[in-house]
Length: 119
Length: 119
DNA sequence: GGTTGACCTGGAGTGGGCTCCAGGTGCGAT
DNA sequence: ATCGCACCTGGAGCCCACTCCAGGTCAACC
Image 1 (cartoon, protein in one colour):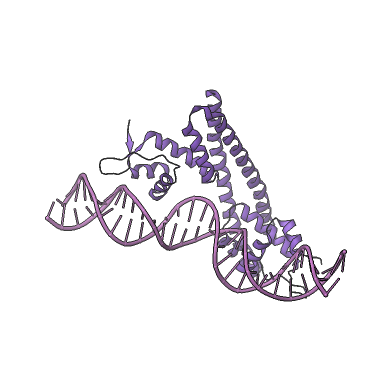
Image 2 (tube, rainbow over the protein chains, first blue to last red; image 1 turned 30 degrees about the horizontal axis):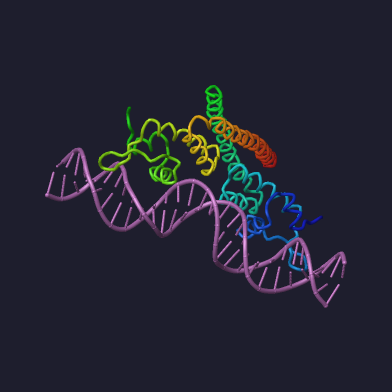
């Protein structure tokens, strides 16, 4: 079972070290294991969880809701229906975001076309 | 040439009155006309511009860049090529956003499917 | 003529999400 | 042994984009 140094996790996840510490501090990450010198050694699991965090964050989920999700995950398998519900609601919001962006994009592209005709 | 009261503009654009004042203060909106009592009376043009602002903002353009765009618009027709360039770059970022969201959405949906299979 | 309500101003405060800093530890290479 | 470097901590600071507030003006309706 391999472990990852902070630098490796930064490299793999794209989060900064400060952000990783921040996530641990607020409880989005469970207390990370340490070596003898007190330095963080992230588990495979930590890195996987960070992948999930990355995905949720990049789709605009606020930290407060990620915390709720983290709590559900920690509470055990009986919360899986709740997790499904949370993710489905989020999925709906992502859908809306995409629809919205696509619609706005049309406006921008029309504007560009208009400018091109004017020039 | 009709004018709009603050309340009407709030209604039409979805911005709050505070936000409209803020946009005027920072120069994203040119100084808005006033009636005898000093109250704002927005022109058709103001409302149109706010529509553009809404679109750019909702697609994630930072205020600093909207200000640059506003400056170009004010500088006259010879800046149209620059405006095209700015909007095209923004359009590219919107494209990326959509692609990114779509990709992340797959992950979320896979997660949901996985949970469903487990339950 | 009094009250309500929409509006005004300048300036302070908020919230989210980091980001930076000072001061310190421990390890490996020269 | 001493240097550089990756890492540690608690806490302060920052940036963005608003949002709120106190105290005031004016017009309109009852």
